[in-house]
Amino acid sequence: MRLPKDFIMGGATAAYQCEGESKAHGKGRVAWDDYLEKQGWFSPDPASDFYHKYPVDLDLCKQFGVNGIRISIAWSRIFPTGEGEVNQEGVDFYHAMFKKCRENGVEPFITLHHFDTPNELHKNGDFLNPHTIDCYERYAKFCFEEFKDDIRYWFTFNEIWPVSSGQYITGTFPPGEKYDVVKTVESMHNMMVAHARAVIAFEEGGYEGQIGIIHSLETKYPYDEKKPGDVLAAEREDALTNQFLLDATFLGYYSENTLKHINFLYELENKTFAPKEEDMELLKKAAACNDYLGINYYQSHFVQEYNGESQIHHNGTGAKGTSVYRLKGISEHMFKEGIDRTDWDWLIYPEGLYDQIMRIKKQYPNYKAIYITENGMGYKDDFKDSTVDDEPRIDYIKRHLQWIAKAIEGGANVKGYFVWSLMDMFSWSNGYNKRYGLFYIDFETQERYPKKSAYWYKEVSETKEV
Ligand code: BGP
View: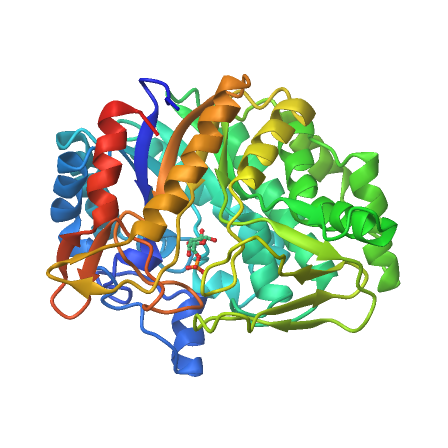
């Protein structure tokens, strides 16, 4: 199968996962700093030392046909407490790095928020507190103006469902709370309001370039299609995790079907979902301002009805078969015969990406364009003879690219793909043994080594043949 000639073959990164220097050069603390220290987990320093090594990484991009890079700006490098005084050293760092991108012919795609709200705002409720929305809008406006000559492609947020549910349902993200669906929905709604205010500001600022948002869209299927309970569970989980955000993004209101499920979940807690009218006006106005959608896709879920008490075990070590996901009134995630999964129990199901793209095309025909902003395989790389033979990763990426090509053939406007990740880096709740990169990093020496997948990716980038 063939991808379009001008298809971007990119690599994805995120500031906190690769930069290192997380408490230096005037950078303010983020909630993750305390959280990781308290848990005695992993250190985000030096991670992949991108702060110093970006010239090397961008040179590798050039050599290996990677012509786009997703980079996030660390909010607390620019505004150490989330608001107030600007840290000029942070601003200078990003100018220099963006310049290097251009010199290497690598188009930078910038994410403004990738899980790293400054601590001062996070400890006061993060996006549950409307003050964070005000600060986020100011930060976004500052970046649009400051980097207007460097950047053409912007994303307001990375993955609103995973960050909100990580904070309040699975407890794997700070503040580490569990099973609170209502807080999760409130946080998602407020983040969508922040997104709306940013895209409206971008449009009103008359900036050149384009803007959109990245959603993690995991496709939900009933475990047993013949069981109405499973069918309902899949529909409800989709409404909560996908459709809620897609409605907010592209319709500018929550559809009746979405509200039916959200209201059901609120009623379980004797609460009412009542977004403010002014919020809804902003969403409505912003729905016309999205130039594209970023889709992060790693896996789909096969779900069955579940009404017992919630129970989640996060497999963060790669002990295959240990993950448990049961959410009261929503669903239980099942393994399915014939569908392989990674050591971290992520189901490998490339058709799910195709189904999701075609769903956007059909359900939200005003989407304009799609970038696949993350996709890739966490793998326990075996580093031998200065490389890694990561055939399973190649197979994973290839199959997903084939389904993307098929979606394009079917009329979907997909313009690029960013493999997660460009190089190995820190994984939020899995540390350093879950590697994703095209380039292996020896975290002791910070040397980079192309894996077999890097050579394969280069060939695809040159031929567009998958
Ligand atoms: C996405 C995040 C990334 C990255 C990736 C892999 O949800 O946007 O930041 O971490 O998932 O996830 P993990 O590192 O948990 O395997």
